[in-house]
Image (cartoon, rainbow, N blue to C red; front, side, top):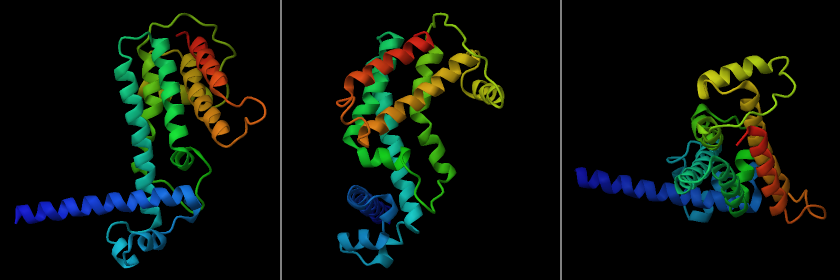
Length: 227
C-alpha cells in the first residue's frame, strides 16, 4: 500500500506540473484575464471535470502560478546573493537588480502576472504574501547588513509614513534609520517600475535598450542608501 500511495502521489504531482505548464502557456497567449480551466483541460486532453480535482477553480490555479512566479524570482535572488557572498554590499545590491531584470526579461508574462495590472475579480490570498516578500526582503537584507556611510536624511516623512516606517522597521530592520528604510522601499518600487516600463515598451524610441539606464539607476539607489 505505501508503494501504491507513493506512485499515486507522484502521478498527481506530475499532472499538477503539466497543468501549470499549460496555464503558463496560456498566460503568454491570452493573458491572465482570459485564463480558463476548460481551455487548459482541452489542451491537455482532459475532461474539465477531471481538472477540478486538482484546482477548485481559476482563482486557485492563478494563485498557484503567482506563488510559483514569486518563488522562482526569490530563488534567483537567493542564488545571486549566495554567488556574491564575498562581494561588497554595493556589488551585491547591483547584482540583485541585474538578476531581477534578467529573470523578468526571460519570463515577461510571469512578471506581468505578479507585478502588472490586477486580474479583475481575483483577490490574492494570504498564501501569496510570504513568496511575494522574498525579493524585497533580499534587497532589504543587503542594506540592513551593510556598513552604511552617512547620507543626508532629506525631507522628514509626513502623514502616515512615520508610523508605517516604524512598523516596518520593528518587523524587518530594527535599528535601520527611517530615511534609509524609506529609500530601500522606494528603490524596490523603482526596480519593479523600471522593469515594467521596459517590458511594456514605454522606453522604445527614447531609452531603449534600457540596460545602461537600469545600471545607472541601480548605482543611484545604492548611493542614496549609503552602500
